[in-house]
Amino acid sequence: MPNDHLFDLTGKVALVTGAGGGLGVEFAAVMAEAGADVVCSDIDLASAEATLGTVELIGRKGLAVRCDVTLHHEVVAMVDATVRQFGRLDVLFNNAGIADPSPSPVHEFDLEGWHRVLDVDLNGVFYCAREALRVMVAQGSGKIINIASMWGLAGGSSVFPVPAYNAAKGAVVNLTRELGLEYATRGIQINALCPGFYRTKLGAYDDPGFLAAVTNFTPMGRVAEAHEIRGPGLFLASPASDYMTGQTLVVDGGCMAK
Ligand SMILES: NC(=O)c1ccc[n+]([C@@H]2O[C@H](COP(=O)([O-])OP(=O)(O)OC[C@H]3O[C@@H](n4cnc5c(N)ncnc54)[C@H](O)[C@@H]3O)[C@@H](O)[C@H]2O)c1
Image 1 (cartoon, rainbow, N blue to C red):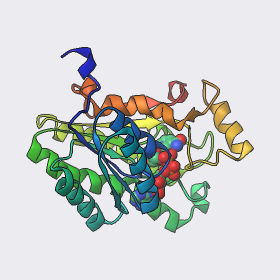
Image 2: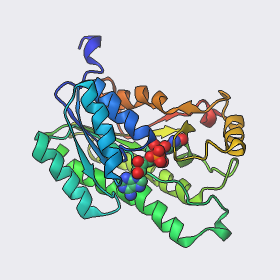
Image 3: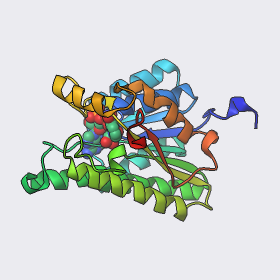
Image 4: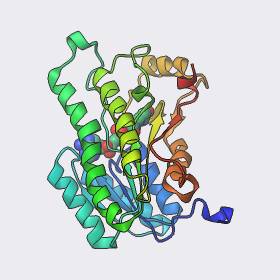
């Protein structure tokens, strides 16, 4: 295969959950730039529509869909809408996620917050993977990129305690291994992407104390801008990563190398 096809997604259809937020916007944009049509899904329809506008400006087609990933019937409807509109699904960015509502140690942790984080960050990933796989198995091809976190690989308390997030993201990393193995012979690659600190609404980056703490923790001495996730996302969605499955790609300014 010539090198210029390694990152070419012409004719492909990508679906991004949480597409209205920081990293989701970047995944949608880079998919469109690589030639894919992009379904932009979010619990907040207006933000998904804004991202669809970006996709269309790049010159690709798309669809904006409201979907709360914690509601299985809405996930089914989202995948159905994708297939109805485009006839296939080649790439799923399982990206929608939330942080622990108020970072606190476990003995003070709010139970409702625990369940909500597990619901969005783990159950939502499972529902979306399940419904996407039903299409991809029939196609005999597909790529799923589960957006985990470096906090799926290590405890977060050295910076701040996020126990529910740690538990959910760790589970996503191991679910990714299991899915990679299950579908290894079916032409479907499933990998996890583990970002470090990226400037989005997920973290309190406007708070100087938070920014100083995460900057100090990061060997490169800076947080990443959201657009810096585009390259790793494109790699995992494209033919460049065809022999990679069940793995985690850590893109964190060196944090997990410590
Ligand atoms: N920003 C970081 O530093 C960082 C680091 C590691 C991992 N991540 C992961 O990256 C992913 C994207 O995070 P982000 O930084 O772009 O956050 P963000 O808050 O900027 O965007 C998240 C998006 O998900 C949507 N969303 C929230 N709950 C949803 C639900 N139930 N159903 C559907 N959509 C929902 C929000 O409306 C928002 O548009 C998350 O899974 C997050 O855990 C982010």
